[in-house]
Structure formats: structure tokens, C-alpha cells
Image: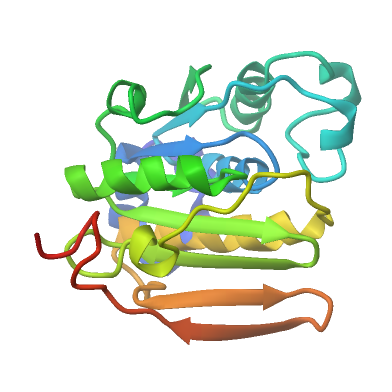
Length: 240
């Protein structure tokens, strides 16, 4: 690695060495969503030196996004979120590669939208699409880092196909998508936890949120955990 790169990442190289930093540089991470969760997720992936970030989103920036989607600014209103995100991420770290996909993820197109990658991060706002990603992750055996928020509360877990319960085991049903209240700090907390999980997974460090659903209550400023288990007859990852 070049000296300038070493200088940029010196504090994290102290944690996992140049070998770990090289793993981040070679990693390809797919981020589904460039909104409230996608902002902290993609930002911290970029500044950590993830080699390639692929972001998928089909929306344009709206004024009501700006309290929590800090990748987008007032001047970006009306702009495609993926373009706005790409500009900010490359300005933060021009050494990385950012690929964008402007499409809504569905069962029909998921396999073509999600490229070959090391990790999938769920930065979505609805469970229908999350379940699409979950099915693809299980089929391809790609780890999936889940995050979701509402109001002051959020949750996160790391799914390792074949080892942990999948999203369908934990949440067998979808929830109706609706406009829900969100404090900007909530996706900031959960998105940062998701990225922390991604970095640990790629570098092989630390204990992942495997078989655990982490719950954040920002109103009381407290964390709690639920143990989660595989369901044998799960239609996605269970024994057929």
C-alpha cells in the first residue's frame, strides 16, 4: 500500500494491520438503499477504504429526506439519490470505486441487480424488498447485514447463510409499508452498527451479531438483545 493510503487509514491499521486494510480494499459490498440507513452505511464504508461499493436505489431526493439522509443536501432535491450519493462518497474517498444501480429490487430482477459481491447490506425501508434480498443472499450464500428503524428505535442482525437464521426465520411476515416517523439519529446509530459488522466480517475480527437481534431504544438510550434461532421448516433456508 502507498504511503498516502497508510496515512489515511493509520488509526484502523493499528487495529487490524495492513493485511486487514488490504482485505477492505479488495472487498465488494452491495448496499440496498441510499437513504436514512444507506447514508451512514455507505459513508463509513467509503472512509474505511472498502474497495468497491455498489449502491442500488430508485428514488430521487425529497426535502423530507434531509433530516436523516445526510448524503443528500438542499441542492440535491430532485436529483437521483444514487447520483447524489456517488458524488459525496467519491469526494470523501476518491481512492474507492462506486457503482450505482437505479432500479427497484424485485424477485424478477434481484439476481441481475445484485452483482458478485462479498456482502449485502440491507439499508431498506420495507420488508417486502428485504425478503427479496434475503432469498437471494441465502441462494448465493452471501452474508446479509440487516437493519431497520422507526422513530427512536432500531434493530440489526448479521445473517450468515447456512449458519444463522435467515430474515424469514426471524420475520416470517412482511409489514405494510407506510410513512413512519424517524429521528435522524436513529438510522445513524443502526447504520453505524451495520457498517461495524461489515468491517468485522471482512477483516475477520470481533464477534458478529450472529443469532442475535440487537435492539436500540433511543428514547431510553438503551440496547437489548434477543436470541434468534433457525426454523426447520423455513421456506427460505429450512430443511426442504
